[in-house]
Image (cartoon, rainbow, N blue to C red; front, top):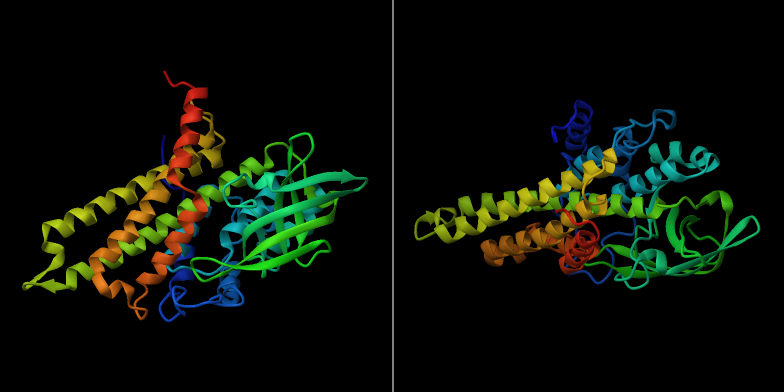
Amino acid sequence: MDFTFTEEQQAAAEAARGVFAGVAPDGVPSPALTTGAVADDFDRALWTRIADADLLSLLLDEKYGGAGLDAVALCLVLRESAKVLARVPLLESSAAAAAVQAYGSPELKSALLARAGRGEIVLTVAAHGRTGHDGAELAVTARQDGEEWVLDGTQTAVPWAYDADFVLVPAHTGDDRSVLALIPRAHEGTTLAEQISTTGERLGELRLESARITARDVITTDGAWEWLRGLLATGTCALTLGLGERVLRMTSDYAGKREQFGHPIASFQAVAVQAADRYIDLRAMEVTLWQAAWRIASGAQGALPASGDIAVAKIWASEGVRRIVQTAQHLHGGFGADVDYPLHRYHAWAKHLELSLGPAAAHEETLGDLLAAHPLG
């Protein structure tokens, strides 16, 4: 298979580099040292610049003002955003809009997609369930009542919950089907409880008590949640890749300047070997990411379902980003904990992304089950 990026995908990445060029994590209050949220809102000025560059509508069709690109293009943009720790709901809003486009009703698409692509409304997704360990669709029940659906349950750690205009919530029905409900912020029957992530950002525990949602705003198509979950996971892997690349570059620059015994520590074999191992992690993270993104974008059939490629990408992303930031902290010494230097922020964000992906052992178990069900021999 050919993993060469198309001209359109490369153009999206170049536009992203231009938008994020002036964004730096330095000087932002340290999430490691704050007891509350870093900010009460995401970076609205940056959000406007992203919208003006048409990066919010990458996955949308031309009739909604979009570029009609795919998951690979989105991951290229997310990769650039993570290098500067961009505080915007780019992944969540883009993925939710893409799910509405792929599976929503014509009325919902007309009401939502063009506005989301222009950045006029912000979407997020409740993807972590009640505990963060069980399937998100199991945390909320949905039953149909005439022209409405009634939702009950709790979703934890919803990103940007206090800032988004709509939350896309997976839920399960009595016949073991999954639906997606688009719920406006401050909707009747919903409450939010503040949670703080490892990055210092504010998350929300979304509680639903007989929340009534019109049928137009509920996606009932089979496979919609599974597809959205895969896109979110792959996008998170792209974020870990961008973050890891920036951290390894910071480590390389520091090791090339820091001297011990009259020589840069980068010239020491022990340092070089550790940096080389982390470079291998990055390359593995990259190739498994593009494999997963390509499967989502192309819908290509393989020996395993696309969920197998996503599981492999998640294994490498979860393990790889942890090893990269740990090595960076080790090689920086005490300087890595200096709040005037941004490495501590990357460490906090890496831990948040690792927790969002879930433990590698769980993904290895998923991959093992898939291999048992689809033998390759």
